[in-house]
Length: 120
Image (tube, rainbow, N blue to C red; front, side, top):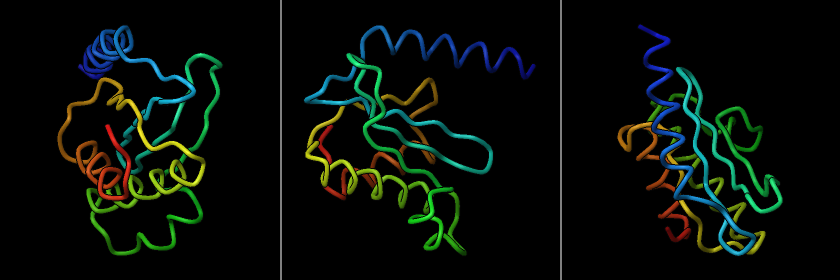
């Protein structure tokens, strides 16, 4: 059962990746969600470089997460990655949910990034 679920996520991921690519002017905001943590990266697909990253394990974010629910933590990570992106000069991004449903923590991360000023 677990392998089937992973296979289906990979299928959705490939389908989205055919359409969504990040450029130097508008990078891809990629989200990965595990059982405990959530990760977000800004990726320039033309060079294959990660431009900025934030997660629940990042030192600057981790201190403010005590006592928060996982969706609230995801929103904080979204705000953190948006602040990093804005300081590095990226105002608009392409959102890549990475095969995950746009619901719960993935949605909270995107809303946090939008509230902090990212456009997508």
